[in-house]
Image (cartoon, rainbow, N blue to C red):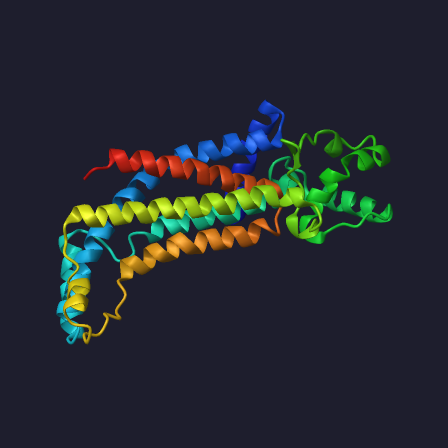
Length: 295
């Protein structure tokens, strides 16, 4: 499945790369296009997030009210979900879509010759062997990136090879080499610029999301009985039952950034650039949608 989407994305990114003549600019245009395509899902997610925040407060009331009667609590919660036309797993669709995108784009960036240039495995293996015969170290996991780096050497050794002559990937973007992998270039501080900006943008995005949820909670006007009772009586036990929707939102908020940061350190910088641009667009998208979606 991931290879299928990676192939489709590869056609699109290759077209953009040939159009603008720069891999970094092509990734930016590709990210904007993906964001536009995903906009309906983003709008639905924003509405779900707003509604789930409001529903969350009502569930906390039920959890406090029926804390000694788990069966009654479960029935009341299910009735509330039905009444509000909501599911405890409403946020999962967005998480699944993001996961598919994450892995598919990772495949595409890791193997640009396969998914963008459509060069077959036999040709790629021939290039790898040529590099090894020349005493050049090849990273098996990122052999196609090494081929792009040593393209001039390969063209000199194999001047009549059609596959090499059709490769058109300019990996230099704003003074950065997008083919570099942070894990393999620990002494080069420039490889940390894009991942660092991505991490910063991730925390800004999460901060905005948290702020929006708090505003929604405040505007909803639902009294959090748990908090009120804690003030009146310190002897009351805290409600230990976590709301399923809140857990789903937390998972969605933390899982994807943690996975992305981990992968960005062991993947070419082109992938981190995609995530950085995606985060910037997502921040703007959430701010705009939050103003538009009132109800």
